[in-house]
Length: 185
Image (cartoon, rainbow, N blue to C red; front, top):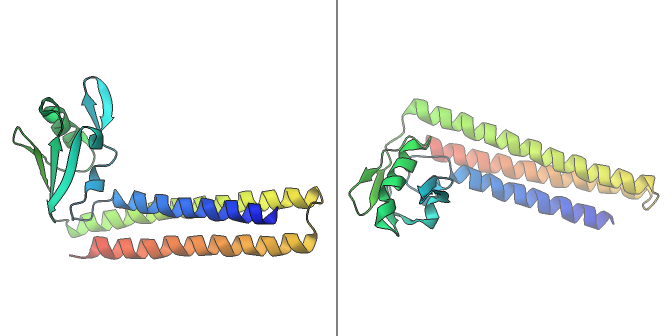
């Protein structure tokens, strides 16, 4: 029973760490990356469709993203969707494909992005603590129903704390790496 609680906690922490990295990939660092355009929805024949389902997204150069639509009629809507997004990008539509130059970040914008990344990291730390709380509640229920002894509960509680500390350490390591990436000129 304790092993099940610990395995569930470990899986939740691993999922949170993976989600954090995915969230970080959406933060613009001055380098072109197809993941920058994740989450952009294009009005495609009346339906909001993810960009990667109506076009291929490539990065032929470090500061350029090229979007090639599968259907040439959708190019205007792709252009509008990218312009309307909060990414601050200015697409160039040549009728066949959309080029998106990635401008150099200013020092002020870099600092804003670092603040954003710190906020995202704090949200994930809170998430890890919430997983810890849930695991401790499960252990408390097992103790109340006398399915585990008090010593086992105490040892499991320590293991839960160790897993949580490890997860938070992963968040901090990822944050430090992302900050360095953002501040690199």
